Length: 336
Image (cartoon, rainbow, N blue to C red):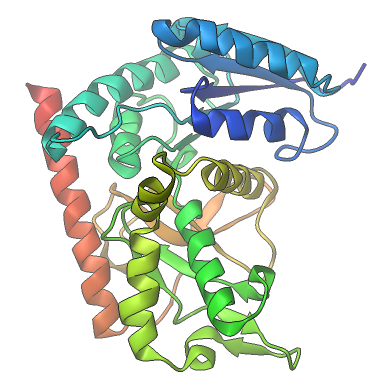
């Protein structure tokens, strides 16, 4: 038996598609390390409990040595009790004909309740990533209702957009995605996000590092193909599969948590939706996607001093404005 204390990892919406692609990687040590035992806390709504019991059976059948226990529940008290990590993949999806305010109102209710559960039952050191959309604003609400947990322990997932941006640059330059570093996703995990390659680097066939923007040498492609493709990739997958991104979302969650847990590489940053400290003129407290580095103590910091031209500033401000509107709509719902 390992002498290492098991990590308690909560996944919400755990009978859903994203969780189905995610749980094996967590339980197999691909995220928190090959010597870290895991206890999974799986939360879903009452009508999904039968399906969730099947997920538990499959996890048992994987016969994973690091997986010490699987707790399935529809109770927030049970789910959030003493957890070290919360991956909040469950949310109210947008249905046909649903206005954004209706979607926000439904999700405010969910994330207010989960914030209160975090505050009451989770470890104060818990690290939280919100995946369920609208992810940035759901994360903002969650943090507001968990005041005893440090704001910097809350994040939302923009790593999927970051990975999508890397992949598009790699395809354009006919290189593999590991040769693309330091793209940035600024702002909201929505169609207003700003995928930025001006500070990214690429390693080309000459074996040397180049600025990605200069290597691409195609302003029209960046503005009229690259950015819209990344912004609307989720909708394109939904249209093609009739289901939303699951495999790629699960991979991005693993990347996000692995880097947060172990630190980023010395010469790299990643994109995370985190509480703004006012950097780059973004309203303090908004959950906004920035380029961040993470140290070995799990502490993230926003990369400072990047030159922002007027065109980039316009796109950064546009996505910030959307987040301000969402935040105000969410707060109005809370006060009703």
